[in-house]
Amino acid sequence: MRKANILGGKMNKQKAQTIIEYMEELFPNAECELKHSNTLELLIAVMLSAQTTDASVNKVTQHLFLKYKTVEDYANATIAALEKDLRSIGLYRNKAKNLHALANMLLTEFDGVVPSDQKQLESLPGVGHKTANVVRSVGFDIPAFAVDTHVDRISKRLGFARKNDTIAVVERKLTASIPIEKWNKAHHQFIFFGRYFCKAQNPNCGQCKLITICKEPKRKPYLPTKQN
Image: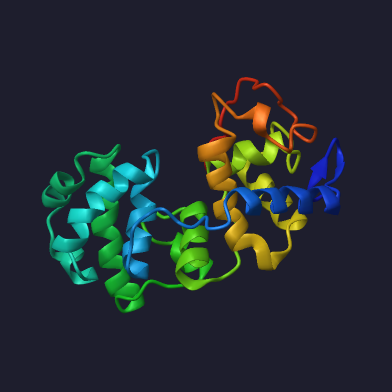
């Protein structure tokens, strides 16, 4: 399989650099917008953010993180209590079950400590590949490039990936095109670019310096790739 491509070929290094430099120009201070003070809180916040906005998660965790301080606190809580705490976000019942199971698994398998290993993170209830990537990147400063809806959309609009590429393929192409030392920051810059500038339904095409690179100028319908 070919790695990153544009118009069927490999992404030109200069084009990739141009894109990264423009995102740096627009969002030099892009960072994780999920509020947290340690890796446990980060892990929980990212897990809760599935199909929910970061803003909604931050409203919930503002109180959640005051009520539950340790892994033991979550493990000792009832699922009913956790459901009540998470009620305002999407899929709260399933997330409550996963949070309770995750806390118990952290205690029994990892001595109550959030692991940094990809496979170990993905073994936790409610933690998929994307969540593990975010935790490794933000919590442990390990190079990773998580692909969410924004990153998927931007990657395809700018030619890092093809329209029908899966999330896994998009990630492989991005990491092949962008220097590893830039992955962690570029991940957040892609998110900011997609969230605040190149939006799904109303992108700022008229102000965008990448319009000649874009595969979907003036907006075409975007269907997000199903997360794996």
